[in-house]
Image (cartoon, rainbow, N blue to C red; front, side):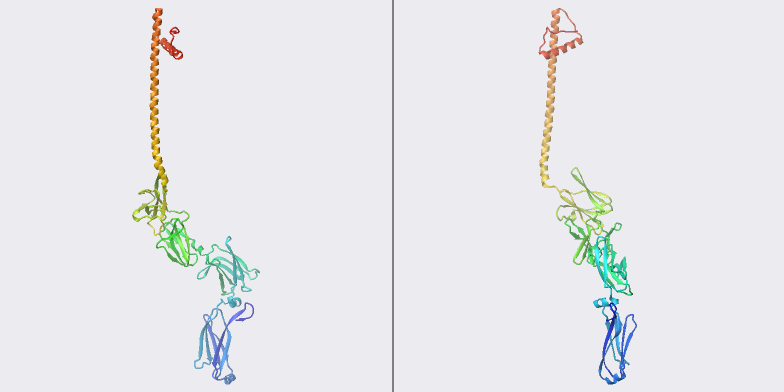
Amino acid sequence: MKCEGKQKCKLNLRVKAVLELSEFIHGLSICTISAGMMRNCQKISFTKTSRTKMSGLQVTVDNDCTEVSPSQQVHITVKTIPEYCGIMWASNYHTPGCIMEDLRRNVPECITGRLSYITNPEMKELRINVSDMLENHTYHLRLCHKDYICVGTGASTQIKKEQPVKSAVLRYSQPLPCLCIEGWSAVVDAPRVQVCPFKDRLEELWSGITFDPLEEALLWEPACPVTAEAGLCEKREDGTCADLPHSSQIVSRGKLKFAKVDPRPQLCMKFTAGSQSWVRCPFGDGFKAWDVVVTSRQGHQDVQLVSQVPATFSVGLCGRSANATCQEDARNVVRVLNATNLTLTGSACSSCLQVKRQDVNYAATVVHCFEQCSQESQDWTWIVLPAAVCLSGIIIVNLVLHLLLTVYQRRKRERKLKQTDSTLDSVASTTQTQHVLRGSLFLTDSPQCRSNEKVNLISNVRKRGSIKTRAYKVSC
């Protein structure tokens, strides 16, 4: 490396040859050639005096005047002048790359600058500081997604050579692991440096899952190149996600598609990269193409299967347990166009209904458990029911007895009134007879007189308890 000052160094190729000199060899020709470059030859000549004095001796020729570039493949040939008996030496040499620290600091073709950054997640900003950049040159910065090449995201800026503080701010939309900061000097074919702040944030890749309701397809495409395994799983109540059979696919760059999927909150996607796994549930917001609706009326539960699309279901009634499963012979296939009432065979008390869609490739089993009947409530039922029957019988008997007593009392009162009327009639007739006989006068009373007479008699009987004949007065 030959330097003329700071950051002004160049690489030169040194060739060292040893040969036996004779008076017929006038010199050496050292030629280099590389891809895309013209042949470059250096000639070293020996004087006639040197050839005569040193004939038959070994001499060393050292040449370092050929300029080369970093990471260059060079083909070298060394020949005698003139060519002597076909003597020639040839070799290939690969010059060192810019990964060497000395080259990155001193050779302009290798100076990329050093990047450091500070992240601001709330503002989604990256504050970038540049050091050891190529002096007296503008510096470029941008954000890009790293793949075979680094594809720009649109965020870019420049740091002018006149700026005293070599820093800039770039905004990002999502902290993807392939999002990198790229920087280079404003020179032709300048090398570039890349720093990826979020390279360990693999969890950011598992977003962007979409569902096509027309094709019933679940779609996902990685935002960054990644080698992972993706599959479908069924989310359970204990938080685990059981893999669905025949759903695993290896993904790298292309789009992933699961055809004919039943959209349910329990259906999720599982991603595995290395020893880590992530679960994402795209239907967790409550989206349902069908549902089981249970209504209670007068202690009876009506079950209805409602679907927004024509579908075929497998329905089974199972006992309540931690891992409730339905035997195949206990399942029924139901075709639903809009809504269908389900007739349950057996007692729904303390049991669960398992429903799974059959006309798709991937579906989760939905379990709906009915209200559990406790033994305590059943014991109370056997006590309360006979007591209610006995109490009803007692009430009915009391009502009948009360009715009979009321009838008896009413009839007894009527008999007493009849006896009183007959007694008054006999008293009135006796009194009239006495008056007629004493006065030797026969009177014929009018109906009005008889009526008044009867009233007076009844009142006298009730007040005094007896009738005095002398006080009786007929006012007619």
